[in-house]
Amino acid sequence: MLHKVSLGVGDIDKYRLIETRGLIDEVVSLGDELKGLRLCHINSTPFGGGVAELLVSCIPLLRSLGIKADWQIIRGDRRFFTITKSLHNALQGAPFKEIKKDSTRRVLGANNLENARELDPNYDVFIVNDPQPAALRHFSPDSKAKWVWRCHVDSSQPDPEVWDFLRHYIEEYDAAVFTTGDFIPQDLRLNKVATMAPAIDPFSTKNMFIKRYVCREVLGNIGIDRQRPLITQVSRFDRWKDPFGTIKAYRLAREKIPGLQLAMVGSFATDDPEGWDIYAALSEEIIKDDNMFILSNLSGVGNMEVNAFQRASDLVVQKSIKEGFGLVVAEALWKETPVIAGNTGGIPLQMTGELSNYMVNSTEECAEKIVHCLENPALSKRLGRQGKEIITRNFLMPRLIRDELTLIKKLVAK
Image (cartoon, rainbow, N blue to C red):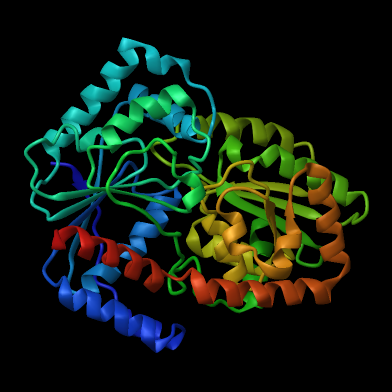
């Protein structure tokens, strides 16, 4: 059988401290209507990526509502995950000519078939996340469950050949979910296509309140100078996050802010073999400058330390080239830390109003905004406050639970 991630039961009522009563009552009501429903989320890694970040909070909250929710992880060899990383990139527009090869398709098919055979089938609804396990529905022809495919990346301009390959699998599902309407490929033929943005959990160790002086002490222990300004980028080691562009922007900004420091805080995931190459190249660059730091979940920097970095930094930079949503943007804004981010994907959903002036389209513009914010602390504070209001209103976990259960209710009613 596939591995099931071990998680407990959450407490939906504690969200009444920060969410509107009407939303929580709606979520509880949906839970009552669906009580006893067997729901399983499936993805390809239990840590290191945005999907895992969502599910570690989502599953316990679903359980608190009376839903029998589980989370299963597919298996695969290195060749499989190398190919599926290319599929992930291709959904975001990168070419992947190998998808034409019979050998590539055999690897994808064989791995998905094996995972389908080991999948615990005793659920009413399966939600399959991203392209790695997308063929599971195809290889589960006798399943009576409802199947949902959830795309977490910017699929607005996918590589045509890869999308054509994946589309035939996805059209076997009962529904598909995208972050925004812009991400839905026009030729997808499916009766039910929904949009819902991801969300953060304000009570997780990554987002729970920590006093700023404690955060500064944590950073001091890591080697950051607490007396000098600090900008931080938190992300997987991934080319779409444009880490080298962030480094260039930092270097340009440092010409105006001589004491500036940069922390690149990243994470590795078991389904992302490219991450090691990006990390190695970044390390070579960062070792040239004592004011730059590279840290990861493999060197003791976990969720609590990420929390500290996001709270203690003067600015968070997320200079993505492509971004499905950007949970790290929501995390920083929740902590009232101003964000400068790439003008792409799901980031504009979060950076509205005055914050939209701090989405950038070039390295030079990013450096200019860094300097402007650091030289205007009152502005930075205002941007942080506005950001927290936006996240509180739109991007906390109970809203996502409501959206997911609303879709499930429609599917099982049929």
